Image (cartoon, rainbow, N blue to C red; front, side, top):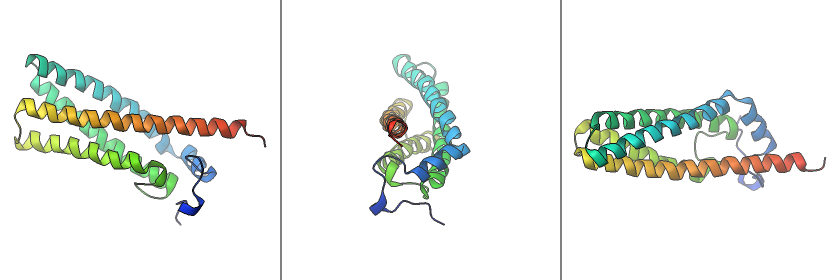
Length: 166
C-alpha cells in the first residue's frame, strides 16, 4: 500500500496529519536527529583540518582522511534519510515535501564521491583535492541550510496546528 499523498491532495503545510503521525512514530526520525548534528560536528573538524593544511601545508593525511570520514557519515545519513522518507512519504527520495533538498543532496553526494575517486585514484594533487573538498563542503552547507529551514517550517506548522481552535 502506498503512503504517497497525491499532488491534487497535497497538504498546505509540510506534512499531512498521517505523514506527521508516521514521522513521529518511526525510529528513523530519531536516527536523523542524531546523525545530522554528528555530521555537522565531523564537518567542522574536517573543515578546520582542511583549512589548516591549505594555510600551512601541514597535516595532509589527517585532513584527507577526515574528508573520507565526513563522506562516510554523509552516505549513512543519505541512506537512513531515504528510509525515513519512504516511511513518512511513501517513496525513498524526491517526495514533494523534500524534493529540492533531495535534488541538492545529489550534488553534495556527487562532489563528495568525486573527492573519494580523486583521492584513491590519485587524479588530483593534494591542493586541488582539498579545493574539491571545500566545494563539496560549500554544497553541504547550502544543503544543511535547506534542511534547517524545512525543520523550522515543520515546527511552525506544528505550532500553528496546536494553536488552531478545535
